[in-house]
Amino acid sequence: MNIVLGVTGGIAAYKAAHVVRLLKEAGHSVRVVPTESALRFVGAPTWEALSGQPVQTDVFTRVEEVEHVLIGQQADLVLIAPATADSLARIRAGMADDLLTATVLTTTAPVVVAPAMHTEMWFNPATVDNVAVLRARGVHVLEPASGRLTGADSGPGRLPEPQDIVDFALSVLREASPRTDRSDSGLLAGRRVFISAGGTREPLDPVRFLGNRSSGKQGAALAAAAHRFGAEVVLAAANVDSAILETLPSGIDIREVETTAQLESVCREQAAEADIVIMAAAVSDYRPAQAAGHKMKKDGDAGLTIELVQNPDILAGLVADRREGQTIVGFAAETGSPETPADELARQKIVRKGCDILVFNDVSDGKTFGHDTTHVEVLALTGTGVVGLGVFTGEKADVSVSVMETIAKHAVE
Ligand code: CTP
Image 1 (tube, rainbow, N blue to C red):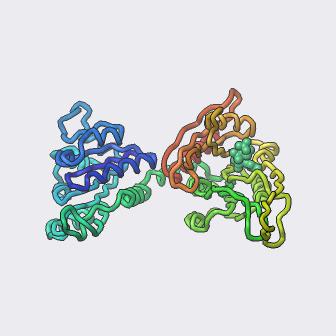
Image 2: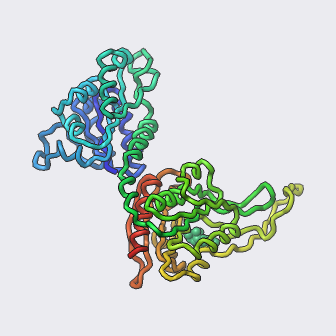
Image 3: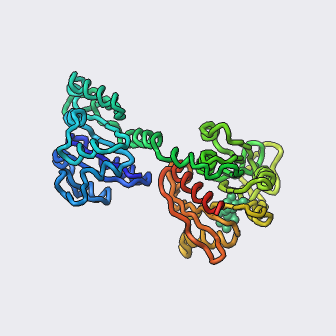
């Protein structure tokens, strides 16, 4: 998403540098628009280096590109952090004599402001009135934090921490996201989609298991996206946190499973009916040859050797029994190795597995697992070889919509 970060002239401007970084890490494109006075606190090179985009403050630079209108028009969100008392007054008045105010005046995207100022200024009736008017006009105002201010004084007026600003701004963006427009497309109306999510667990004894770090967020988000595209969705949830499952629309049929054997039986049953099968679950490749019926006890100082046997490859089985016209999607989380980069392993995997589509997550350096953001590449196996269908970065919820859309278009072609 295109986010405009307005920075106004307060001592807290330095904290906005971290805001840029967090937004970029979440996969967004960030255009920083500082005011002249903001540049007295943090210079343009810092903003340019962090955002990778040019920085200007006035409406007379790059006039031929009509930037004072374009930046606001192209924004998905305008965030101003810190927003000084002066900038709130100027936005309330509808001024447009610098690039930031002109951007706020032209945008139809949501506007979020994070005010920061001395307590007296924050409680001054002029500011109170400005904030009330801005709120009434639909501007999202993040309450300032309480704490140490610039001088020796303290009280409400402090800029909240960058992570809190970003969380607030992205929640506003999610609410307003064009995802809802895409959802109405009915792209998958009348189709049955089966998705597996989470990670299987193999019991060692009644209290211990072998498992993996998959949270199930991505698979659950795919199920939500398929549901929004009009599909009839069944989700096999392998050890997915109930907090994730509770956020799903009630129309999704959820089957909770624990082990690979349980998952395989649900997959077999559901794949027999589904038009699209998506194996997003991280399936344990091995399980203990025997699970103890009672809690295992330590045996003196001796180590413990557990014999593992291989689990069936569920995806391979589904590919072997593919129904006519069915699209089967695999997932690959790869870290790569010194010899073979992660994306090459993914290309080899789609050929080896024989699935129609492979969604490839780069999980090197602990990326992806349990996080809200992700970076995926969607590959398809065609008669002429492996082709890329798209690369998506951002919040798992947004990326899942794009991935589901890509799968749906490929499947109905
Ligand atoms: N998968 C499966 N059954 C298994 C293992 C994996 O259905 N026993 C599916 C996963 O759900 C995923 C895809 O296969 O969609 C790839 O999973 P991955 O663990 O990367 O594949 P492996 O075959 O285990 O490959 P390798 O161990 O060689 O990386």
